Length: 285
Image (tube, rainbow, N blue to C red; front, side, top):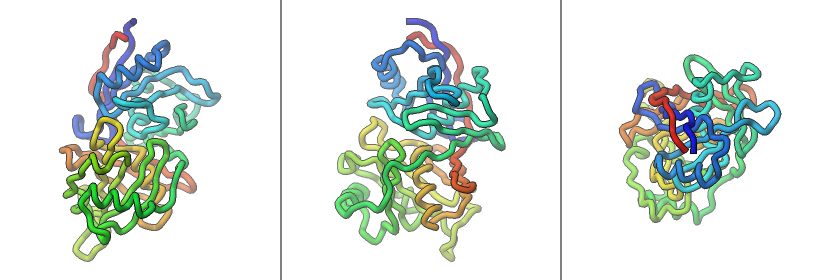
């Protein structure tokens, strides 16, 4: 065991304690898989990341991402939080963008307007949900068939599926039966509407409300979820359900104030937010 640099950051919020916390072991080289998983189980946050030297050409660093129960090939808030931790510790990118290596490959991260943003990785699974999955979702969320206006697989690593409801108010009113939802990882999105039924940009700067229900990772509802928002953006923008640039609110039901900034530029969708550094120190592992 030795002392290693350690930090905790709050991701997707401009207000400390209102986003999604991430624990980062900055000097993770030498730790075994079991040690990394045990530390993630001990922090009991939705994700804990471990930074390592890169193994692929062009990468600035390598990250491994763990929930309390398992390792993930990719996750969004650990991508931004890990990047911020790496930069805070003196990391200097080889080019203008930071390049992160993770299990899904190389992910670009850029700095803009006081925020970090990652380029959404390709979807591993897309297309509409089958009726069996929809029936399970309706039962777990206590919904009627007409409540779901659109649905899609939006899996970029964690296994996300998603449904759109008629309004943000419906999304915020949900009280899921997590046992009935197992083993799905479900994102739910709904638009903030004016009385005339159009998107309302003035609603807390957010055009959409998002919630992430997770039945297999030890955290029933994730406060703010980058990977889900990346998958949602590819679906919503690609199908014309959302504009090329929008802001999603997440965490409202958990007394958080997450804001996810989405923008399509050419063939790339960027998913970004502010990152606050709350803890810096050492951990003995």
